[in-house]
Image (cartoon, rainbow, N blue to C red; front, side, top):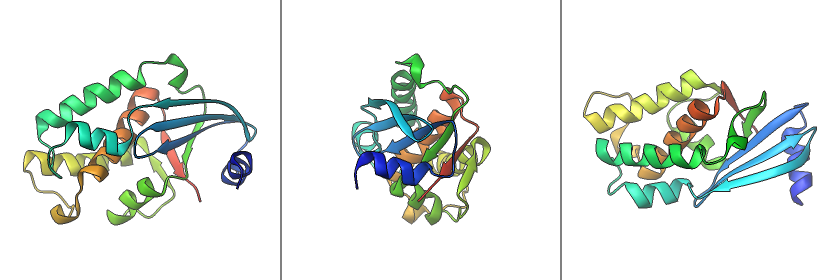
Length: 166
């Protein structure tokens, strides 16, 4: 399927300005859409595998590793003012991100910033050794990097929610 056809299908229920996010293995991809038409694309070298490989030595990262990753992600996100939310709806058809939510018993298609923060807090609890509702054996550094990236995106770029779309 051509990129424009894919965008049309993914964004058919939205009007106006939409930001399509893909947290890929090697990069973050932001596609800026207006009325289903791609206006601009920005990529950052901060995909979930990039973050996991660069900063996390084991599946459960240390607090220091997490802080280094956060600093790097913040620097990447703040490298372009164009990334700041300008009354856009944040959406994603990212299957890896959807799987991270599903495996942690999140089943809806819209997640508020607070819900993203709540899931991140569960991962952070594991790091600090506190009790968590997450199954420690099912936690991977790639999942941790994915939810960390999404948390930093919603927080620093000013998105109140993300919609996961098919």
